[in-house]
Structures are given as structure tokens and as C-alpha cells.
Image 1 (cartoon, rainbow, N blue to C red):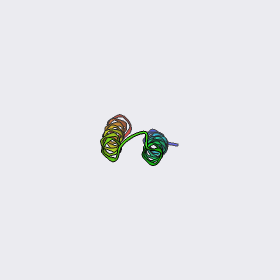
Image 2: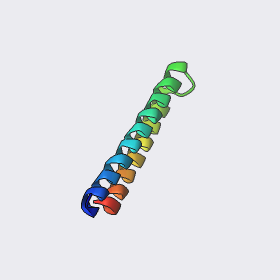
Image 3: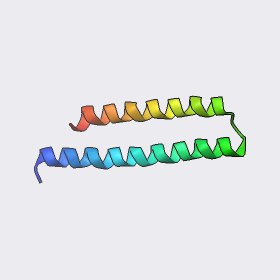
Length: 66
């Protein structure tokens, strides 16, 4: 496999891992809201935070591997 392809494969792997982490975080936030341990507003704030962190992570991965 060429270096170019290896870089893309690594990016795809890490991006998929980041997406799985995001899914887990969003599920936790929904669960916390459903259980009443956080308010709807707190859930929204947490979602904004984890989504921003996810986008930042993807940006760094693009810069490093693509």
C-alpha cells in the first residue's frame, strides 16, 4: 500500500473511532436527560461542547493525515 493510501486508511480509522466516541457521548447525554440528572438546557450545552470537540478532532486528523 502506498504512503498516500496508508495515510488515508489511518485517517478513516481514526475518524471512525472519533465518530463512535461521539455517538457514545451523545447517548450518555440523552440518558442523563432521560434520567433527569441534567436539564434540557444542560444537555444542549453538553451536545454543543462534544460536537465542537468532535469537529476539532476531525480538523486535526485532516491536517495530520490528508
